[in-house]
View 1 (tube, rainbow, N blue to C red):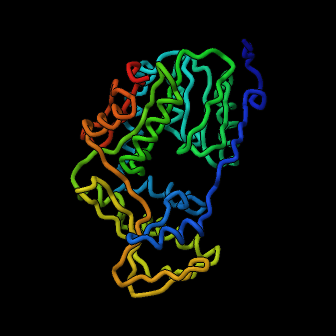
View 2: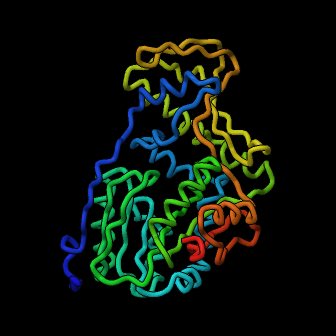
View 3: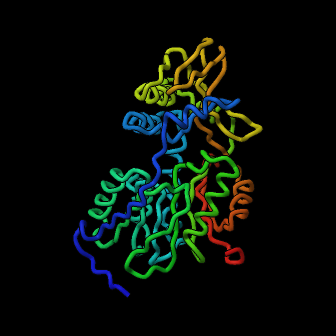
Length: 331
């Protein structure tokens, strides 16, 4: 067994690069735009401009998820830390420097280390050293990987009582039902017997409240949505951004928001060596954001080998943070 000796930040950071496939925006866009229901992959929203626009979205008065989840974390984080227990390894799917993650790390009792998993190596390295500076006795492991794909988890040097993953921000709602269950199964395998997952979910509520959050009056979400067309134009497409408008309706039968780019006119667009025809009023789906009720989410968790151990919600039940534990009978 290797004893862990707390040292300077640079010596407490380990970078593990699994060289994930970063994808091909042009090829994936061409393929998606040739489907009967045209679609673009939402993972390409987040270039530098897209990331800044999303940060602006989280501060809009209409956009309740971020501040509601943060409010739950602020009020209940000690209970969450107690449920996780002492000497745990925390695994975050993301770069790990958000306020919600810091609140959780501040509350945890002697965590053995934190493992960050993100596809951007640059973001990971910056985050890892920032966390190592803030938590001067904690090992930080940064894994450059696509967390939607299977992977093996590196372990901190100190022995850990359990491994618990953290997936804030209701990001799980971007997956379809089958994708979400598959992701949860991979997480259950990753954290192993006795492990857990702390995950944020956006709850079903009045349709107007949900739709207002994705169709803000200032048009920031519209700019965020249209940014994917701008990115495509940078690599050779010829979208006229003025010929599209943003629309994000709630689809009750699917329990989700659908982010759409609607063609204002009949038009043809070149993407690589393909020509895409759009009729007036036809839309391209860019993202799904599923909303859940607790029994529905609990059923998904059970299907994936978890049980719902605890949950915390705001006073209006607009959002919940759920703590799932691996069902040892299924492990």
